[in-house]
Image 1 (cartoon, rainbow, N blue to C red):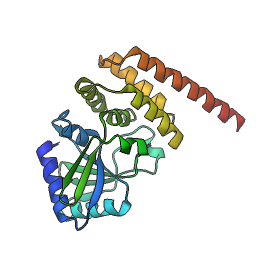
Image 2: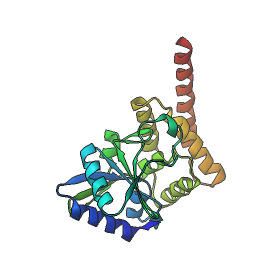
Image 3: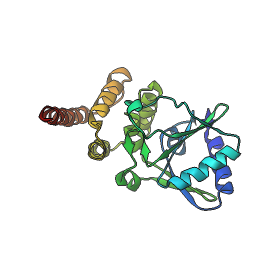
Length: 225
């Protein structure tokens, strides 16, 4: 596990070693630690919009004793179908997951970028922190129990704007072929029933309505083929 101080130490190391400015986006547990919603994380998740900048950070990690893991860990639903697997860097129990533009099935959309809440500079490394709403949405596509607990922590700490989450799930469906509201509905229903999360009924009703409509449209298109 990597705690917040260790994560900051890694960012400072990378920033000091980089010869030019590099921007990335912290998601998942990495972002949650900046918000004080989590004490540590199993892996540091960073998203890059420039592939060359991802390679620069990868090279710094290689020179710091990390190795690239070729057999990746299944985390997201429909993981095997996607080509957007991260560069996974491992050193003993420490791990970095480096994503280029896409987080498995999710696009790093303009709307996610616009909602960035914090920006931190560590020498030449600029780390932008995605919103709590986008962290929850990203976790809705995973199959790990710990991501349910992470979502619950965010819901307890922040006044979540559910409209943002619902709108982004629809936006992601427009950008990709996956029916994200269905993932989201299953995730929120599980949070409410199994984890006793305070998910408003009107939110579940709205997501279910959108999901059913999308599924009907999907089946119509499939029958026409």
